[in-house]
Image (cartoon, rainbow, N blue to C red):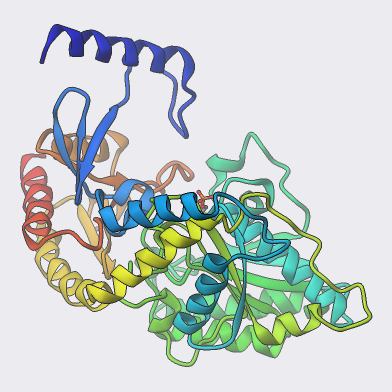
Length: 453
Ligand code: PMP
């Protein structure tokens, strides 16, 4: 590396320390983060020339990997043709994308665009409350989500998030947000002896709605598979049961597909693993553009939208986002979806995901591995100190595996900072377009890290 480059890198590192406020990270003087310079496919290179495979797809969003020229060109062309236009009026990329989303969801949906997953969920909450209001049930305002879930960082989405450490300095959250236990069979919240944890967890939602009074509950929000909260994968029947319960009580079902949408789980959307489930509202972001530009979307079933369009009333949705549905973001999303379809990414993830899981299951014989779970390209390795007692692995042990993988050129993650003792799940979620060599590298690297601890 030339002296000029070394000086430039030193300046970047110093300015990073001085001026840039990083997301989620603890600020430790002299502890410089990795500064990325370029990316290609599933790999990125930092300013010191080290190359890493991004085993968590950035923040689970880089579904098609880096360097897709077609996507960059779609953005550039759109910016030259029409650089900005608000969706109080309309433009072709948003129209085409909303139609495509409805087609992919397999029913008639109307889509409201924003810029992120948090905003997509905030939008869903406002729509749910207004819907009930205009449907003659103004008292239905509460939302139910699950402990361990993450739904975003803005105050409403954070109130639906139920990971104590993320909230503790910002509480109290918004009134009307309730939490129920997750369908977490490995550590069933209803007792280790409970055999049908998923069913009991679903029935608990029914119970809570009744205890609260169905006339006060607006919606249940959930991911089809809890991702950041520890890769919790219920059976397909869980969601079917939840959907039935929601219907019975006229409670809307909001599916947070921010992580699981666009192929991550081996279906176009995660809820599609549960036959017969058709959510009232589906929220999306991340994989919608594979992270090339920001975009959030809230797709609302037309039976819900009906209540917003009655003529001669004041029933419209009083909500606007200046940049939501930006023409360039929508053009990028359309190109992203075109590639996902052209390259059969979804079925590829389904098939390869199974074979990676098969290979990772070898880790179950390791003394610090409690369970290996996955759906599609979303893998969780729950680490323990002791298999019998299931005592969660220490911070040190978790950090050691992550550091060993990094030394070997693989970035993997860990579930969000929930209450102590709950963040013991390693998370692996490589780009969906990773080559078979990339995927072999992921599996071999993780296995060799476990050998060394
Ligand atoms: N929902 C889920 C399930 C998420 O994982 C995230 C982000 N990690 C969000 C919502 C919020 O998305 P954003 O960061 O784009 O606001």
